[in-house]
Image 1: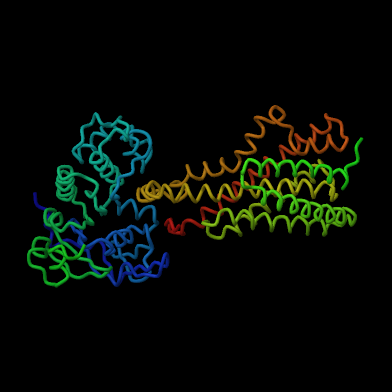
Image 2: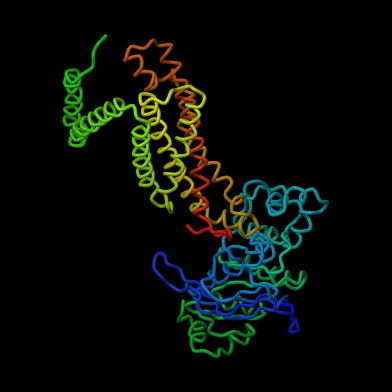
Length: 250
Length: 251
């Protein structure tokens, strides 16, 4: 399965010199002058060794954390101009470890938007089918699900918000290889069928290649290089990228 | 009627000596602490006794308010020491204890349950401040540990477009409940398990048990109102310091 190619599409998220500096436990710049323009309906993977600032960068995109400097535009509008709850519905984030709330699968799906959604005919079926889960799972207790199923429910739940961008923070790191492949296929499918812009964080460059699209390679909060995933990791332009591929940077 | 004075205290000291001997015999290891506690409580309470005698003698509203302010300052500091992880814990405790004290003491005065005399305001204020202090500390501790311990749940809710208020509604409720729990438990067991302090004190001082019971009921209602006000003010102030204006969790 290949990611949706849309070279003529508009930029949905533009970043210019964004950075984030934390002061605890020590003062440290974890995202450093990051600039990149993301086009809509594309798959992007942010790849890098642990501690390279991948997740920190992702959390700036939906304002879960505040940037210390730079400009971040969503549809050419500074993200600060959006009501934060609205921004987060339009730029959804799925965490590395899925958290499902007490209740049922369907109450989780309706979490963002209230009970009126639950009562819509075929509501659960529609969103569960998006993530390849059967409709009869709707009434299940989330605690009875496998981690892979939980991750798929978390993905479905974020789709209910009607996002334009889906941020995925290491979505397969807690899964076995089989379940990981299922999620990878699902990510490509969501991009292709729903036209979602997807920005996924991964420490695994092979996964980035499997997902296709564009990869951005990050080290110590710096964007080292970017390009089509297959090309970037088979023929890296920077020494650091080459060292990462060889497993010298972890 | 027995008159309680230094003579009786000196005799009662034999009980502490007995306790210390028992602790030493059983190698509990608390003898030193008990000995220091004996001296310390004696000095502190006698000093407070003289201070109260002085303030009661003045019958001056400013002196009463000054005494209450000192008690609130010490109470806020103690509460803040117990909730060290909470940003601006001292300020939160001060405002919330002050609010609990003003509302309850104010209402008691306005409704003429008590008159503005030192003999009413100081002891009742002390009870209010003591209970409010514990409540403020508990609410801050619980709120901080529940929110940071459930960071993923809170941030998941935020990422699903919920406001900070919605994202922490459960933790907020549980923290306020924890702060009020001692008063709620008090109502369940009062009179059945132990006779409460104010009532015991009044009976020892020669009041009729029925009169003592009435005062105790008033004290119970007053303290519940105080911890409710303090707990809610504490929780509101504390959560505002845990989130930015853009609903970002910062602790």
